[in-house]
Length: 397
Image (tube, rainbow, N blue to C red; front, top):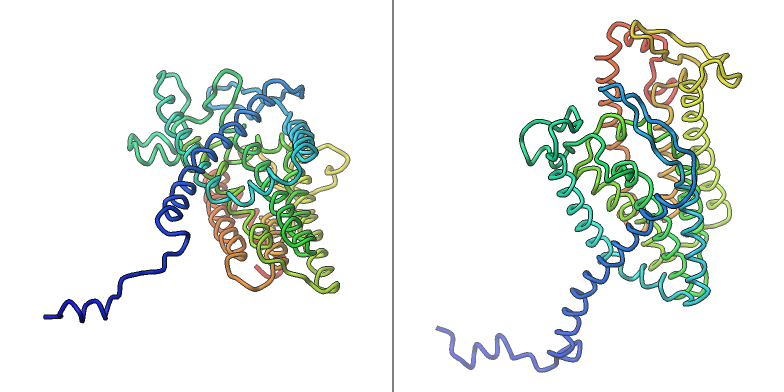
């Protein structure tokens, strides 16, 4: 049995207390936890602000793809104008309060991430319950398993709407994509506020990423033909992905650099910049070619392209960008993201999480696309694959 004196020698009582002792410990714990409700309020205001712009800003109203019942939903194309109005408000805030609100955002990244998770989960619970309002609600083909856990995750209703507000379409590009821009900008401002300058690595990360976000908004109507909008239900998976995963995980490089600046040599910076521009051009030009052909195969820009016509009447390109590889846009998208990972240096594997995750995501999408097309086009798909044998990189894979 250990004596009391021996126990005191083995485990002496703590005399010096860090963080100013008990009051400091309580203040840190209370302050950290109390910021989450503040962050949740801030995130809710952000979402509501963009929803307001969705309603009030002018823009073309376009029809989506034909649904199973033959109808077409209408969507406002005003995401880019929402971005510029929000940018003007951010500039006004910078003029009035300086770096304070942006540094607050950068320093409360984790609290804002938690707030976005809470908001996304609450939204997913709402749309799941809302999908039971009527037997005439159009459900996603993959979201009507009658298992509440799976249907909540994958999304039960195809296009949940509150009046003219299409929640899936709204969340796809606005709170998350624009939130990504806000986070990146805030991290750059914090780096300048703390270290006195913005490193070339930070510029190599945020400029391409912000350009990517703006490009997405410029081509906003193209999202109406994507799998997310056409076939997937709106459940926790998309709600969390749009509101949390995109802005929080895609800004990891900028966040790391805000606290740990990396300075590249001019040749290295130029190499990363060229890689980003070249891969972005592959992504954008291939997608533009596909969308132009889908819209009007007789358009002078694409009427020279070769294609095969399937029994279902669909036309599959076998020349141009899409003659090089069946998913050439994925290749450009991945190398574009890898360029930002390289810009963040090699000090931590955290900044390469995006490249690994995005590779897994694109491979999964490829499998979904291939299976879907094989089922849809049957023997025509085999004929197509014979003419376009490569998946991602011509003559490689």
